[in-house]
Length: 379
Ligand SMILES: Cc1cc2nc3c(=O)[nH]c(=O)nc-3n(C[C@H](O)[C@H](O)[C@H](O)COP(=O)(O)OP(=O)(O)OC[C@H]3O[C@@H](n4cnc5c(N)ncnc54)[C@H](O)[C@@H]3O)c2cc1C
Image 1 (cartoon, protein in one colour):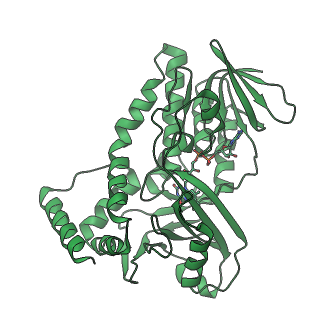
Image 2 (cartoon, rainbow, N blue to C red; image 1 turned 135 degrees about the vertical axis):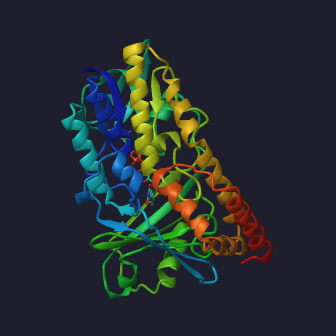
């Protein structure tokens, strides 16, 4: 079969791209290796995403406006978002909903593993598993995650900074009752020496996980220690793990192909947030393909727009991670700074709506001085 666009991967980035293209009348096929895939993921999404992409309430299992942050010494900071919440979704339901939406808009969905992609002049041939006939497409969108086959086949530069994260799902029980209505984050070298640990509640389970730089530490041992520190004796009913690529590839656009979401490395450092950026890049990427088909505008506008919108957020969070995630002393200082209500306000505003609104000068000075104080004091 021949299409204008073939999207490889049916996670949030691919599904959003497929819906956007199909809505505009571009013939689109989305190829997903496993339509029952359960992507290892905390499923925490910001309010801004829920609004922008019209995510129905039935998919958002919890709307959490309370959060607590724990330091290595056990200091707890409690915070509340006055005007927003973090939504908790279950990826198996979320991804399937987005794919069905794309299908309703007219995208074709094929279940197959993409094995090879060959460029033939102005087109591509995509070879599939299960003896399915190859697909011909003018444009390729690689939405196939951190280990993107598309990127390898089409010669994109490598996905660089990668964290590996693991999560376990525990059925709700008495021990876990205190975690049912808030987001809890642990900054503790024993749980993660270079990232953080999280506790995210869903309707019938609590997801507990941690991450660390790929191949640097024993992830399973860190996760076991986290669960032990929480005093959980119950056994998880599901263990899941995957890489998180937290640095955009040097380039994620070619003249007739683009990468979106994790395939492009679009997960923010420090917090490992990827769902929003996957969906936003899927949408921006698809819009660039539409402009290319209709008006012959270069696909490069996609990458330029993405970087212009989000490079400051990536830079800010990368700086935060490199300064504060290096030792328990620094993590202790970081948690101390989180007590400041202005810091909380700035953090929530930028997380919920992905807008970097500069704080007034006096607030910036106060936060700067507090940073210096806590860094010197080490608490
Ligand atoms: C443990 C963990 C916890 C996380 N928690 C959060 C969180 O709470 N909030 C948040 O915002 N982000 C979180 N993330 C990051 C988030 O999961 C990703 O950024 C997001 O899933 C990226 O979406 P995507 O569509 O780009 O890629 P993916 O969701 O990885 O989807 C890629 C799809 O491509 C398919 N595929 C791969 N190769 C092929 C092939 N050759 N042929 C056909 N199909 C293929 C896969 O089956 C998959 O469905 C977490 C990540 C991990 C690992």
